[in-house]
Amino acid sequence: MLTDCVWEALVKSFASQMKYAFTASSFVKEIFTVGYPKLYSMIENLLERISRDTDVKGVLPATTLEGKDQMVSAIEIFQIAFLALCLSRLSDLVNTVFPVSCRGSAPSKNIYLKLYHAFRRKLKLFSQMGV
Image (cartoon, rainbow, N blue to C red; front, side, top):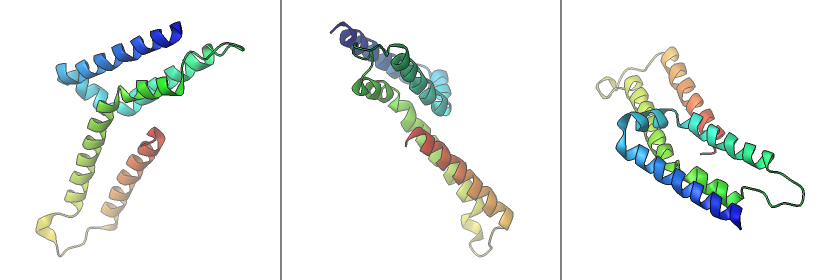
């Protein structure tokens, strides 16, 4: 079917451009990595809009679940980089709260709350992205 051929070509092109952007430009890599949640929601919104705008009775949908998965997997390299960045930031935060040199002293309640809220924000963000 024509829509399948067009969609396949679009996804392949998008995936190759995302891979190229990840490897060729450190600026683009950083922007898409740090802004991965926004990139993910933009892709989800685009796919939802395509589905909604092409929903015609008696006509096959323009996008399939497989096509959506392919489009999301095209930005997976940025997801992996984003998760690594989050892990690094959270590890740094834990290391500042529990430094190796101060094993005997306990951090204040305020520092524990700061750590708790940082983890909570990241977990909420991950759950919204379906990670």
